[in-house]
Structure formats: structure tokens, C-alpha cells
Length: 189
Image (cartoon, rainbow, N blue to C red; front, side):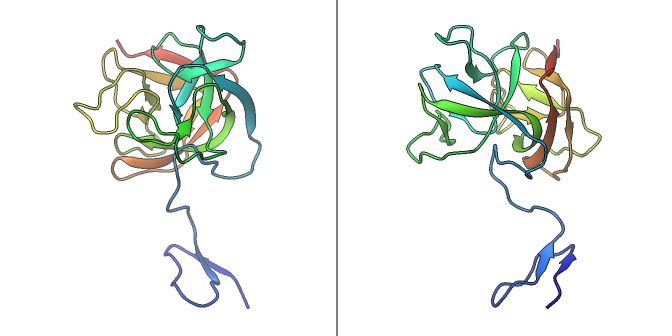
């Protein structure tokens, strides 16, 4: 039996032999593939859950050298994206997103392709921006650590060393390639 790939999803039932050309569903923080990813272990010492798919930065208030937190300012030192590698269904942040509990380790991707939430439509030519300050009251889903393309004064920053490798027609999950460890931010002021 031949396996074929098409632009439409396969039909349910029986043995599947036809597959869609692109990933149509993913979770925040999920790896897009098993290519050359660089993953480091950090510790959540924030007192709260750090959601999967969030951009994380060095936590200078932590008691260990590899402490990380969700980005909170354009001046933070970025370490990567909190990868979905283990799910404790009781661990959710203040917005009911799954993540890593306080005093637990988190796997952070500094190089690779990861599924992230975009608060607006993006395509391969869009700028990669991250929200460091909550903007959810104006743009649904625009919470710290999540992504977008449009500059919002004092709330977003351009993430250098990243590019979109998929597109969305509205807010939702898109694939983001990051090429760390030299990730840097430029504030939108």
C-alpha cells in the first residue's frame, strides 16, 4: 500500500494511508520536529506556574544559577521557550494554561522549532515580537511570554534570532524557529 501526502486531511476510519502536508494542531510549547534542538534545564522559582510556550528569561531573584521566569521586561535576559515535555494536569497558571509548577525543573528550548501562541495572524515575513507586559484587555491572548507581530509601545519587544516558519490567519498556534543561545530583545518604545 502506498502512502500519499496531500494538502487535505485524511478521512477517518480504517487504516490511514493519506496524510496532510502540514501540522494542523499543536499545543503551546510542543516541539515541531526532532531536528537539531538545543534544550537546557532551568528551575521555576517564581512562586507560580510558568506556562508552556512562554518565552522565559533569567530569574535574577532565584536561589540557583539556572532559575528562569516568564519574561517580564524588555531588559530581561532571554534563555528560550518553556517546552512542553511533561504535563501535570493540576499545574495551571492564573489564566488556566498548563505549565511547570514552582520549584520544578523546566526544559527550555534555545534552538529549534516550537509551537507558540500568537495573539494575531502572522506569516513567514512577519516580525517576531513578544509581550512582556499584559495587553489582554485590548488584544485577547496577549499575555506576557506570548507572541505577536505588531509593536505595542512599552508592552512588546522584537525577538532577534527568531522567525516564523508557519502562518496563521487569525490568533492561534504558529511554529516559531529560534536560533539561540544569543537571543536578544529590542524594546518597542
